[in-house]
Length: 181
Image: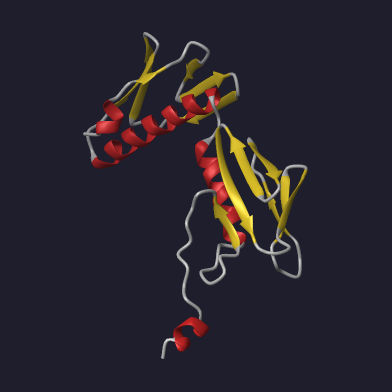
């Protein structure tokens, strides 16, 4: 039994939820998003709440039960507030520029790195901060991870791309270790 799957999802007044076959469409002030529901999971909209329940009792159904409920909850929150990830660029000469729906990174390589935003995700840059935003939490976090993977922070000087507020564990260099003997 899924503890997460049992909880109903409250639908705020400015969000519209529609069922059509095995798909759920959620509309809100920030946009709309849909999700295909597996055949072993049932979704019902009653009294301003979304109820997710299993239609069979096996291990796979229990796994999807909690996942579908969590996804639908994230979609409801996303169409109201949206999601964003902020990342900092640290390093001399490192910079980022938004060109259309992609971000161009100059992070110490001989060439520029271009990362394209998937549909529904937007990039913004403020000085040395990259902002990845959208209504789908999974797409926003996956896109932010792809941007960070271009140049993760290195442990000696801390140069690279990191999430805002992330601490990088620093290593002591050769000079500091040899000076102690």
